[in-house]
Image (cartoon, rainbow, N blue to C red; front, side, top):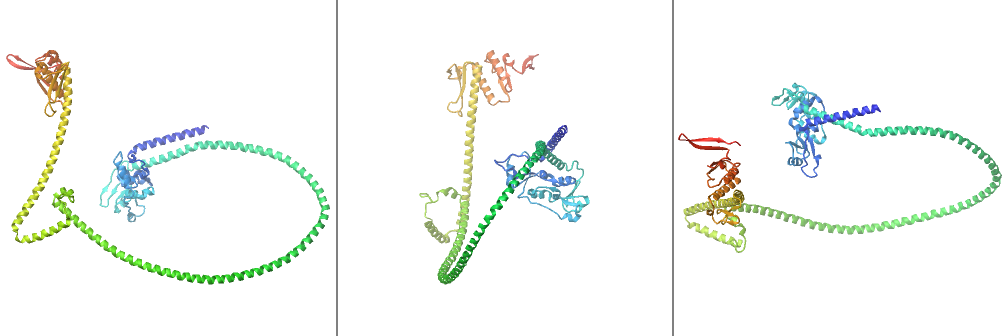
Length: 619
């Protein structure tokens, strides 16, 4: 039991080590893991095959560096089944930029000719050195099919295709060589190989742990089987002892039955003599009956043969009669069928004529359709040219054919009038001055040019009007928002500075025509600001300035003795209120104002000269 416990602890430690190794390798290979969210509901994830590096298994460990160099950045490409799946992934939420290889579009490039140049074993196509599933063969051929892995540098030089040595040096057909120090070359594939081996070992250990309960159950059943076998052996030994006793009794019973049988045989011999005589009589009687029956049977057989012969004769006669009737019926049916075939042949010939006529008519119709299509194309081109030449057609098009409009006319009559006028024009051309016609055409072209310029200007004018209207609307909205905000702050600040009062900015007709300042003491609104004292008007002006400051602060405010008409309490209130906002340069003679300043500049006369003294107040 202790040995089993030790084995179990060793297995658990091995499983934990494998899990730690898998976790470390997975963290190191984070760039190889392709994680994504489903781009749509019920997305089939089997369409995404995975990253190239995860889809291959390197057959020879010594070629890992060469294979990693040959594949390059393509090791991190993602393989999908179709380009539609790739588009869906690209539209989804990808955590990094990826290159996608659709199996139905990618073209494989496999070269094998280089092996013959350097000999078997010296150069191998990179594709043959990796294992992969058959469904991703096209993608693997795209990644590894055009590069050779050479055992030596000399072999790589002789191969006139892109090749890589086992050390990771690259040889191009153009003669370009890339190589040198490659620290950790092939490390990615080695880590992937180690990760695969660790996962396979962990899978085996998982299967072993799954079999442990079965092993316990097997041992339990085995012990029970051994107990049952021991019980069976005991039972058999007991049964053998009992059987010997039973056989002795059976022998005695058989001997008794044998004695009884001997007495029965003596009785049978005495009875058998009388019964033999009766049996001989019965046998003789049966023999005579059999002889009579055989005679009757022969008579019946003769009668049967005669009846069979009569039956065969009747059958032969009926067959001959039936054959003659069938022959007559066949000839009559053949004649009727021949007549029917003749009528069908005639009908078919008529149908054939109709089909040929229909084909001729169809060809005529096809030619007519082609001709009409050509005419339609010509007409469409003419219409396009007319639309391009005459811009008024596009604007007047909706009136064409409407009754009561300028374009309500009969085309046939108009065409007749056009031909008539054209004939008159051709007659008048002989008497028209050609120079005047040239001048007229030039003037007409200038007129058309001016009309087109006029249309452009009118379009620009309408666009400008539209922009002006939009700007006016934005201006009105901005002014309204500004008025509402400043009005609220203005009333609030004035009520704070002068309790028991109210103030507002009221438009006479609209906020675009100007605003009037209204003041109320209690519930009585003043008709004019002239009714206010100088200090009240100063407070009103300061409230408006501070309300504007709250809406859009200016970098600097200059106030010149705004507290001249204010008492000391109002002066201190204003000083405390403006201190935390923006920058104020205030000219004041009152201590209640400049006590709230950060810096004070005092002017005074010293020896008849005006001087300025700067004082920084403590915060």
